[in-house]
Each structure stands twice: as C-alpha cells, then as structure tokens.
Image (cartoon, rainbow, N blue to C red; front, side, top):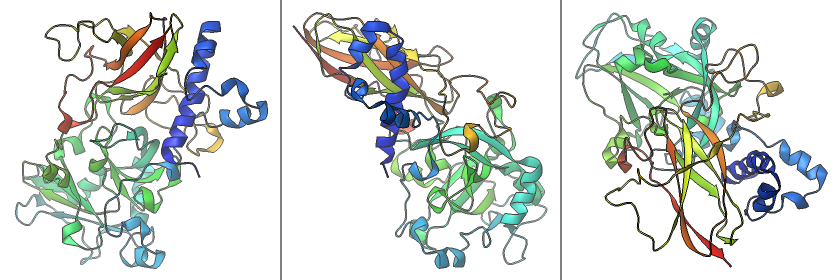
Amino acid sequence: MKSTIAQFMLEHSVLTRRYFLGCGVAGIAAASSLPLLAEERKRDPNLQKSLDAFETWLTKPDDFRDVSRGKPTPHSLSEEKRKEVGLTRDTWKLEVVSDPENPARLGTSLTRMDNTALDFKGLLELGEKHAVRFPKAMTCLNIGCPLGNGIWEGVPLRTVLWLTEPRENLRRVFYHGYHNDDPKQLFRSSLPVGRVLEDPFDLPPVILCYKLNGQWLTPERGAPVRLVFPEGYGFKSIKWLKQLTLSNISHANDTYGEKNNDVDSPMKTFCATISVPSKVKANEPIPVTGYAQAGISGLKKVQVWIHKDGDELPENDRYFLQAPWQDAKILPPPKVWGGGIADNRIPTPTMNFDSDTGQPTTWPIRCSMAHWAALIPGLAPGEYTFRSRTIDEKGIGQPLPRPFRKSGHAAIEKLSIRVEA
C-alpha cells in the first residue's frame, strides 16, 4: 500500500495535470519540467486510466497519516483487549459527569457505576434524529502537511450534554480517551461550553463521531467513537473517547498546552508548494503547484511571487504585504471524490454539499483542502526565490492575522529556482 504522502502527491499530480493542459502549448511544455508531472506524456494509456481513478479529494480511512500517542497505541491492542477496555462498538460506554473539584450543577450524570453511561446503541438511536455529516481536514498544529481529509459523521456533542440536564456553573467541557489506564499517558482536551452548545458563523457542530466517509471508524481513526471539532486542529478531536467532564473552570486543561501551544487557536488558512522545478531555461514558463488549507477564515486566493536574489526586498515589510504577488489558480472540485465513498457520491445530507446534485455549495470549503497551480512567465537567467501565500475571505494575507507558530503553522514558504541560459 502506498504511503499517505505518496498517495497525496499522486492525487495532486493528476488534479494539476488538467490545469496545465488547459494552458495550451506553453502549459504542456512547462509541465514537463515538474518532477511530479514529467512522465505524464510517456505513460501507457491504460496506466493513465488507472491513475485518473486516484483523482480524489477525500482520503481513504486507512490512508490517513497517523500521529497517535500511547505505549502501546490503543489501536494496536488486540481485539480481546479492546473489548475488555471498552473500545469496541458492543462494549463502548461514555460517562458524562460533573467535575468533582469545580462542579457544574447537573440534574443527572451518566456513569458506569449507575449503569446510565451512554452505550453505542444509545448513541446511534440519538443519531437517527440528530446525526450530521461534514467535511473536515484533519491537521496537526505543528505540521504543515494534512493528515487526511474526510466526511465525518456523528451526533452533536450538545445532544448528549443535554441528557445531564445542566442547570448552572458550567463553563468548560473536558474530555479524554483511553490510554492504557496509565495516568501518565492520559491525553486531554477541552472546549468552552458555548462552542459546544452553539455553532457560530455557520460552522458544523462539535460531534461524537462514529463514521468516516460513510464507514464505521477503524481503531486507527479512533473507534468506536471519537470527538471531532470542525475548526480545530487534531489534538482537539480526541480519539477513543471515554469520558466527558462538565466543569466550572474557566480555562483549558489541554495536554497540548503543556508544550507551549496555543490550544484555543482554530485552523489557519495557508498554502504550501508541492512541485516546482529547481532549474528551468530562460524565458520558458515556470509551472508550480501546491495545496491550500482553508482555515476558519476561508480561502479567497492563492498568490505566488518570484524574487531575483540580490534585488532589494520591500522595506519594513516583514510579511511581504507590498510584494508584487500574482494570482494562482485554485483548482475546481475533482470529478472523483475518492475516500472509498459509495458510488462516488457524497452521502446525503452533508453540510456544504447540495443534496440534489451532490456538488459543493461553495468552494473551497472551510476547514478543508484545495489544490492550486500557476504558470509563471519566463525569466532572465539568474538565481530566484519563489514564495506562495493565501488570501483569506477577509482579504488578509498569510501568515496574518495569526503569524505565531504556537497557534498553528502558517509561515510563508520559500524555494530556490535557477534560471539557466
């Protein structure tokens, strides 16, 4: 099986191929200099037909990149052990309790001791009326490359929270998953209760998730139930969920905060380059391709800029806001969604998709991914530096409005290009 990165690169090369073919003779010729696309015209037609099937936007569940913690990792446990610790659909139970040290006032609690904890069957019964689906890219706060993009399905967390009949003194929801019953391995995260109870800016709800791309979650993806926070980085979407604690504390208790990370920062909008030639001939168009993450502020544009080394850079312009950026092309939705979904059709209903046509109602979709490409006019011989950036829906250029690393990756990437005579 191909690695996640290799699969992502292959999907990207097929998507961008159409863009360069549409640029005419110059685009076709320029594409031959791209490492990912150089063999395009040499491929056997039957092989090309097979490669076209990889033109996907969704990631197959088994192809998600895994950054799970734990010794051993919970998904590596035997089936017998997972049943013993409640990590199968027929043994899973979720406790929802008040914080004993900073109690929220509840009408009732859901506990194993009282045999009132929510089981998987009960969760699915709630799903018959309340289940939602939405697309989301799973990304890490400190990693630029996506871990995978999928359609996540589950029950809004608030639906379960209301089962406890909360009355007052509830400010934060703490939650954690199974990590070998070892306190030193416990991985925690949290959300303000306001975000759990309400969905601002037309965002999807926080969910107790049990399906990915229409399939039951696998142990690697957090089965049987994980939390998925739509606009959050991966550490907020705890796997192997076991307990919710409703607290009157006003601040986070996230494990990620212990490593000097900003735990309440939502996904940023940024782009990165995937393929760019390191050497090109003078006056020949230069093809570049990449991907973009549409964060909480959306994605309006991707822009590129080539600067000749030795020339003066914009003065007092740390984030190159005054640089002569040029618009790249954000590529349209693919013809094949991928991800293993049935009949190549997004399940109905799914947020951000039209139920009749199965097509996205807006593109790119926030908190998800898109591919981009550009064909840059030829240059005189010399050494150059290539940069790319995003412009969000508010017109703000990467890495702003949050340029700080601890709140998520968003640095402007730079690559070297040599133009030879």
